[in-house]
Image (cartoon, rainbow, N blue to C red; front, side, top):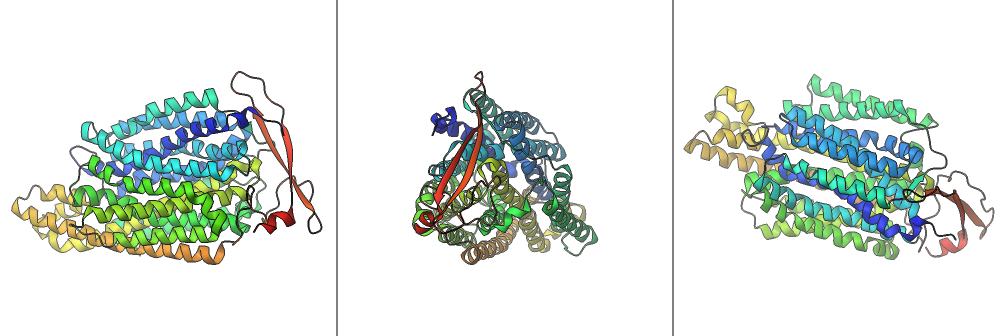
Length: 565
């Protein structure tokens, strides 16, 4: 088998791709630490809880809505080129976010960051799939997933350091030098690759997915704002969003160039793995949203200390992700994925025990369990998806995993954030009599707003502060129980639905319900080979001549592969 430039330098290329990944993931973890500061009227933007939700979800919605399109574009124009474009856009939008003067400006700048992130993320997994053979791919994806843990560890601490010494916008400004280093490394080291048969861009599908998601998320967030799920302004957008998304799925199932090929979900390995990713992040999104407020507003830690306290999440994720491939070889993807979701469920139940005086040692254990569960689930589910999608369509497979995560985060923040806001408002309402009628509405926008109002009331305000802390913790308890039920349901669903076949040692799983494109030969009897051409068009590094397309059949007898399971 000829060795290409990408094969010889694949581990160096992986390190460059990790830089791109860390830049995108780092932004979200840094934002979690900065939420409390952005909510403050004096040193931040005075953002309400719903505006903070939109600051998160404007990024997420654009990111999720354009992942498939940018995956297809990357397959068409070149994944390296798309990676450079995405990193550049991400850096410029980060600069805009850092100097936003109002919550609205921050929301729009964050949406622009989502545009860049959507161009980056599909290319990373797609390139990994193209440069690593099936034997090495689980290890490479495990390292890729471990990098998420590193970013989770670096993000809060970096954000805390910046917030202790600079203004809130510095948490976005840090992305600018990181993306500059990333672009330089991509230009110098990453080989170009394209799909031999790229699809057309599905513009109606892209528009419908974004419109549907925005309407649905807007309705859910609006429900938390008005305190009623039966309000016309809540039901209308939710129903309209669901209708658009149903129409989107119907259209995609009949399109010859879909942005989301829903037919891939007929394979239970892919559909169950995508569901595991989605349920994991939906359940955890509530924790991401309230933990910053709990540590900083309720417990009184500085942003730096709050960031340091979250490091066990990253440690657990890094340790577990590196061992996930071995666990799958021993126990199978079904057991590993369901077990990881059960660990996440245990961590979420643990959050229900938190109070205003809980020892931090207990919280550190909960954080470690949370990270370990996520570190087990994510590489396993990601490899399951990528093993189903044909190699030349790696962009689509990458987009499926990332869309599952981002849509789940958007809906989770909207649903669980709204439940948190509504619960906090309801529990605090009896204690707001000390405020004027005009001030009551503003005081319930977030716990930061309540504390700002209480700070102007002297001794009376001290009692209101204590009530606000208690109301927030009680609302947090309700949110965590709902999250735990979702994660537990995911574990049960994986135990029932996910196929029990293990990944064959050194190869992809077999038995996909979706035939691979360009299938050259299918054995008709036991032991006859299946020949699947793996086509990768790799261009030599920058400045070198373009290499000819390489077509290499990978032939494995069906009987021998199944025998290992």
